[in-house]
Structure formats: structure tokens, C-alpha cells
Image 1 (cartoon, rainbow, N blue to C red):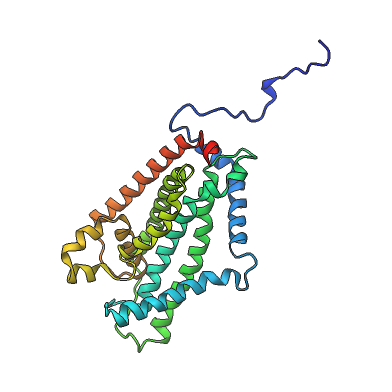
Image 2: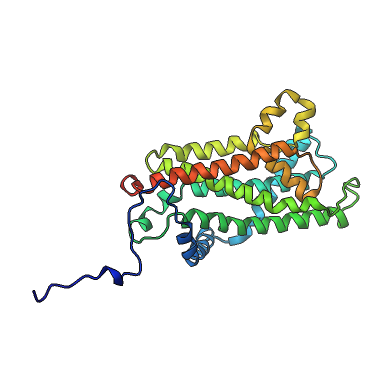
Length: 296
């Protein structure tokens, strides 16, 4: 009959079908949308400090002020020794890697709820957004890592008299740095996806994340070295090491400074826990993604 259009399915460039398999993640499709990932990275960086006076300078100010607070509270008041690392270097190294994990975890845990309006208008692989969060925070981490290097150089060459015992040497420990950064990124992505998948239905978890991250920092060797717990409270060192973040934070300080204690067995445990968390996160995400637009 005239006037009735003929639809030829062979002319479509993209066919969107419901997922039937539990692990039908289509990572190749995520790679195909890599330009969109970069656009979301630029959006996150521009929106975070939009209409602020100092802008990206906050990337530097925040770790500096946190380091000052930690220095007076934990080193001067509590008397926690950080030798052979100067306290400012010790605290800034801890804060740098902790900030990367906490911002990745917190931002990823709310990514589906925060971007529900975008999901309802256009199709793209949903994993694009949490991956863009990890990458955008990597830029912030890079800036703070450069600040840490400046502080290390300051105490090595300019203010050598304040901490004469501090020295630095290059070695194979630096090769651990990219491994630890990737492990932190994977743990933040996997854990964040799990929480984000749950918060699409139960919004109470957003409050739990904020409160939980504050507590997690104090049960991780961020404001104190692991050797302090091993010497003063040895009964708690196994409990502390069971936290997968402990070996990664200690490993970061060892990788960047060449100082600290790192157990190969516990480090492998942390990496295995990261892979398991990432796998479970993708598994839950694959299940929730089918219906989360109905509940978000």
C-alpha cells in the first residue's frame, strides 16, 4: 500500500538489545566511546571548581592544610614518630594516596543517581561515567603528587638542618608506584560501583558512604605509620593489615620514599581483594543496569 514506509533493519548502524547474560559488559563498546569518556573528564574538572575564586588551586591547598593539621595533632600532640621520614613528608604522602582513593570511591558511589537525567535521554555504555570519574581524579592525584615531590626536594636540599636524618635514593621500589595507583583506582571503582548500584534503590547508603570514609581513614595507616601500631599495639597489627587499604598505603610510601614496611603476602592479599571487588562490582552493575532507570 502506498504511504507505508518500509523499514530495513540492515541499514541501522547501531542496534540496542536487552542484555541476556549476566556478564555481558561489552568492554569493546566502552572503548568505542572513549571520546565520550574524555568529554566527561573535562566536564568533571570544569564543573568541580566552577564559579570559585581559586579554582584548581584547591587541589594544592587542601593537602597542605590537612598536612598541617595532621602534623600538629598526631606528631606534636600525640607524639607519633615518623622517623626516618620528616612528618610533613609522611603526612602529605599519606594524604595524597588517600585523597585519590576516597574521591574515586565517593564520586563513583553516586555517579548513577547524579547522572540519571543523562541516562534517560541518550544511550551510551553506563560504565563510561564511573571510568571518567577515575580518570578525572587521576589528574588531581597527579597535581598533588607533584606537590609531594616538591616537598621532598625542599627537605632534601633547602631545609636539610630540620631533619638531618632524612635521605632519599632511587631504586626498584619506584616500580611499585604504578601498580599501587592502579590497585587504588580499581578498589575505588569496584567499591564505588557496588555502592552506586545499591543507592539506585536505597538512598540511605549515600549517608553511610560519607560517614564510613571518615572512619576508614583512621583505621588505615594514614595519620600514623604501621610500625607505630606494631610496636605500641602489636595485638592490633593483624586486624590493621586485614584492611586491604593498609598494605596499599604503606606500599605507596615505600614506593615513593623507599621507607616503610611492606609485607609481600599482605600486599598480594590487597591486590587480590581489589580484583575481587572489581569483579563483584561489575557483576552487580551488570544485573542492576537492566532496571536501574525504573528506580533511580
